[in-house]
Image 1 (tube, rainbow, N blue to C red):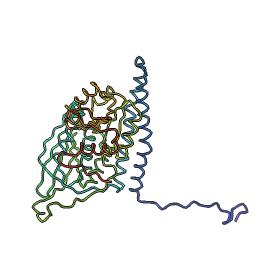
Image 2 (image 1 turned 60 degrees about the vertical axis):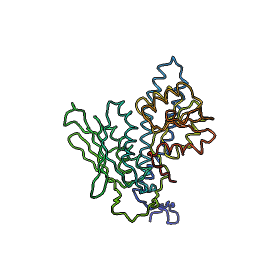
Image 3 (image 1 turned 60 degrees about the horizontal axis):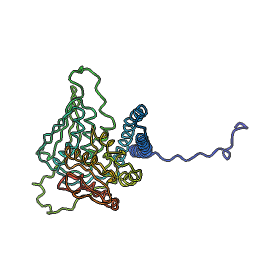
Image 4 (image 1 turned 90 degrees about the horizontal axis):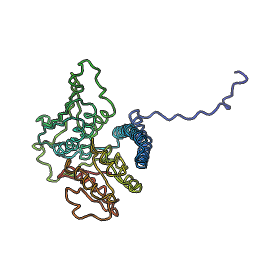
Length: 381
């Protein structure tokens, strides 16, 4: 042994290496961590951008235009990290779906109606042909799956989207088909097809797996056809079931993961208070400072919910709210204020939440407004 070689006693200590874990679990944890560590700074950057836009001088058009140009890239980056976090959460095994009888046609109709405005702003149509069907699924995750499917289809389609719902006798299942073209009519047939397997498709696949739906996809001749198959309860084979069977509950710490909401207020304290209540439930939040900004924000697409500060009450708020609810009846539009105005419980005036009961009532109102009519949204912790 050379004189300058360290003896075993002098050898530097070697740090213990942790045993390798399951690669899928590690990847899921990485995606969830990515979402929490990256989405939060992006959300803060968007919030500061809104503040800068609100403070910009009316005559400083160049600065306002530059700030507005930053908004969409920041939103896309934030949404991508939220998608990654949702995929990680679903693949981590922490979400255990319930098996409940869901009114599939009713949920599908409500999701499609809520996205018509977004499709129409791009010159697209959403065509729906659905039979009545009840399927075994999770009432909280089912709307998330259908929204994810439409998000993916709207992102890639070059034509209208055709959605159909049919029922198969054996095996007893409901089949939901989503069909759209991948290229324009005047585009060359040999043009490079788009990459359909990005984060949006991964979210569809993982959500379908979580709810127990079989997912199939065919891409041919510039047309994409995706099919979801949901198991159905064969009532003729389950006549011995009790009249009110015990529900099979799932576990979901973020029942609104990936759903979009917009908060409208000029008061930072309002944004902080509502954000603290909604973000832990998985909501992706956009914060705006005025009714005018909210109106512009909703020209292309509506979020799943709007929560507005009652301090902005007036003719502008009433006109905007009436416009939104006329286009999307039953939309989740919640005003927060110290005292409910007369007639605030009318359908055309949306919902009202007393500011003194915000912690207790906001989540309840969101659940009730977003649950399919006639059934409650299963909200599990």
